[in-house]
Image 1 (tube, rainbow, N blue to C red):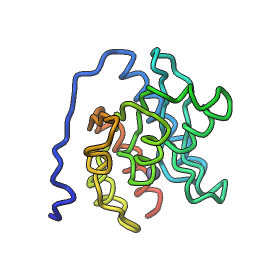
Image 2: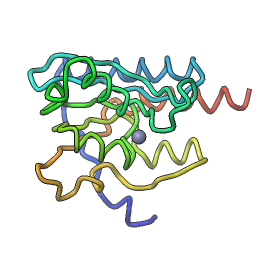
Image 3: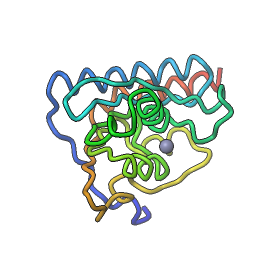
Amino acid sequence: MPNTYAIQDNTPDLGPDELAAMRLAIAASREALDAGDGPYGATLVSAAGEILQVARNTKVTSGDSSAHAEMVAVREVAARLGADAVKGSTVFASGEPCAMCAGAMFWAGVKRVVYGATNPQIAALLGGQSLPIRCAEVVAGASPAMQVDGPVLGDEAMAVFQDAVARRTR
Ligand SMILES: [Zn+2]
């Protein structure tokens, strides 16, 4: 395995509100799949613990290749409530954020990322384009630090990716 996968996964025990936020992200990933978009979802929770946005990937339907779920969530919260609303937030992502999303969330002031399925799991299952760097590696040494936790509810998150592959071969 390339050493880009060397960073260890970190699976914390989540509270009920955190698990609920992740399940909303997973539900959004299924909506994205049903709409013909990439099967990814994300929930943005404010620093105060309030759910501000549940978003899904809209890459195909919007024609915007950067419209990953995490990007959509950050943009929609900033557009609606202002950029400060994103600061100190936690983003729950059904799939481990890519390098683009990890960087964008850092610059937006997201404090913590929690992911469902891991990047290596998703890449191995879906194939196709691959940007094989772990989220934690992208933000390693970042200042201020961004915490990265996962996989969390990985089996539930992976089920949607497995459905995506099953639909492809039908
Ligand atoms: Zn991304």
